[in-house]
Image 1 (spheres, helix red, strand yellow):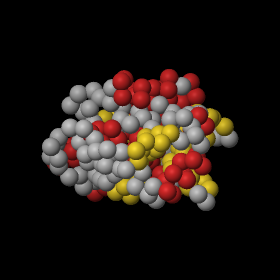
Image 2 (cartoon, rainbow, N blue to C red; image 1 turned 135 degrees about the vertical axis):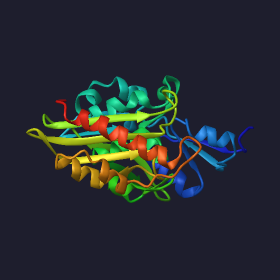
Image 3 (tube, rainbow, N blue to C red; image 1 turned 90 degrees about the vertical axis):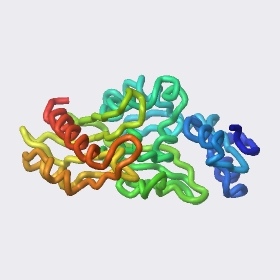
Image 4 (spheres, rainbow, N blue to C red; image 1 turned 45 degrees about the vertical axis):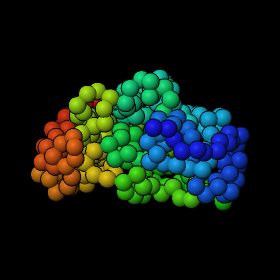
Length: 278
């Protein structure tokens, strides 16, 4: 199947993008295109205009400063995977990136595209949530920051509104007491995860504090397991609390019961990672 006819415009600045979106309310932004092109070809999406933002070089930067790591929306997965700044200052993202699809997709797919698309089985939205990061959104009135806890609204639904463009994400830079964990289970490496877990915490002697557990593949959006977080901070295994935190729905990949079981398996694995020095 081929996509429905559409017009094409290459943006030269963020202001150019904003003006084009104001003129064409149903336009779609083209970044990596790894999700958009597929939906166009299947005619699940038929925008009248594609706005190509690949020429916006100011959205292609990675910067670590003032205790945060900022990743521009157009940074490719492969670029982030190879970045020394990501490896040093955002090691949870570095752990997750090799699990994102396959090399050909990581070469084109963008960080901003993954966050904006908000697939409930994707790795990076869960990492952003686990890290307590934020999303920078720009429109005609300027830029605003939206906390990850408030950004993901539902199935493929986010805080990005009409006329908005996601321009960057920011996460706290790793500290000496930072601890991270990541694990997922998929039928084949590179496939969407049946269940996955991204986690962050701080070491307090042999204990953990500020634990954040973000599961993906179990709900319509990445979801924090707050009861299990509290349990880990108390030195418990969190499995009993996890049963109250998650209410997964079965799908073609796995039943709800299987997802609950796998979530517990991943919690044990990730809890062990959090206990290890970074």
